[in-house]
Length: 563
Image (cartoon, rainbow, N blue to C red; front, side):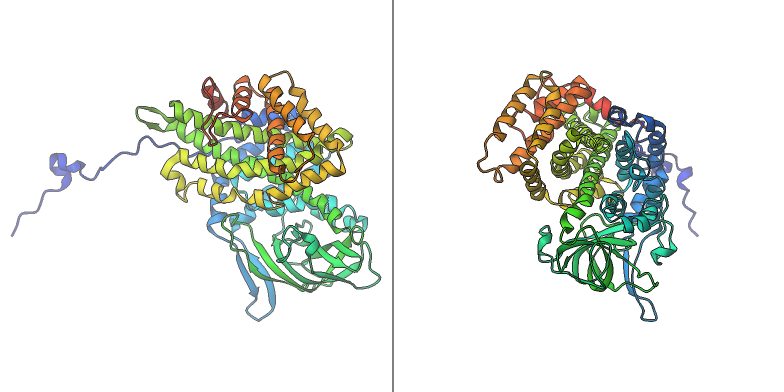
């Protein structure tokens, strides 16, 4: 009989064979931190733009959105895509979309904290700013479910145009609560609102819509119609009602279409399929056929676009908030990683080339937030003609610029993290997939530029209001002064305006961001922004800040500290 082999523990150095390595030089997870506390630009911006009264509320929400269990909800909601069920097992038409419980928890978090309603139920100075700051933090947890929150919020100005419908619907639209049940809206104390505008043949050109609206009785504002046609995008299909565009006898009109009829029967609009999206996967978007769906006209007949544009203006503002939040989360992830990760003998955040990249990411994020919160303040002061005119131009400019800058920002942040940033257990792939959505939805870049030109044509004084805001920084930096003078001179030319629109809108955005940073941020941030954005140094990629930039100060300002 052979003698037994000695155990590894008894054979000297052999006992270490199982210990291949110790995990070192890896950052801790960015969790259990306060998204408000660890964002100086957000704290300063909220205070500056009129929401200092909400400091405690924002601090509490920053703690909630930074908790590990809240962050996990975002991962779960995206790992478990919504599933569409056409019929029940007995053959009854359901048109039911089922979501993972994490999605419902996120919805409940947002709606219970008034992200869909607080400026409407509690208006006043700073109301839109406070809500934007809260939504900015919320979207960093998970952005996709924000779609129905945004649409519910944005629908209020449009529904208000029809007082009888507003009386019946708005108390439940603005109620703080969430009821995901697939039951008639009459059985709910809180409801959500979606949108169904575009069709296959038209896309952004909604005047090409072919869906027809047939009056049930006399017709007209507030009256019942039956809608027949199709919709290429219905988001989100489990909302309780939708604002819909359809061709009435008097032209393209806006309608409120509920998911259920008042008698408790299912309204005959049928989901055909869910969109198979590259990102935004936790949210369901769908195609639908309207087969005599009951709806009520909102606003004047034939004035559907002006009626629903009240909603679109608000959704575009939320696109600014969401993309700014995405930038902040991407920058925070990169800054946090590089603060803890060493390579080639030093922390990444201390190495000059990486400092250039990190500081540039932080600049883009802070500039986006500053612009967004400034538009929020203008929404809080629409009684002022100056602010109303400023909003009309700043909204399409901001939506165009901030949303368009987000995809490359997300990619550069991912590259800072390296291979781990590409892995699905990191938030970066989700941020990257989500990054193009806001630039395309609610009007693509070209649509925003055309809307800017439309604003200039219909309200030329809006450009004066915009430049009056921007010019408040004149004299603070010679580079800014030169940039602004050239921009104003170029608006004096009327030739080829549409062809030059992107260039002009780019520069309108940069001028406002530079003005805000010069007036309100630190000297290091303002100087670096003017040097890198207002003067050409030959490099177009992130990480082209010129020599003399105080990158370390910018990084220190933007880096979240955990623990």
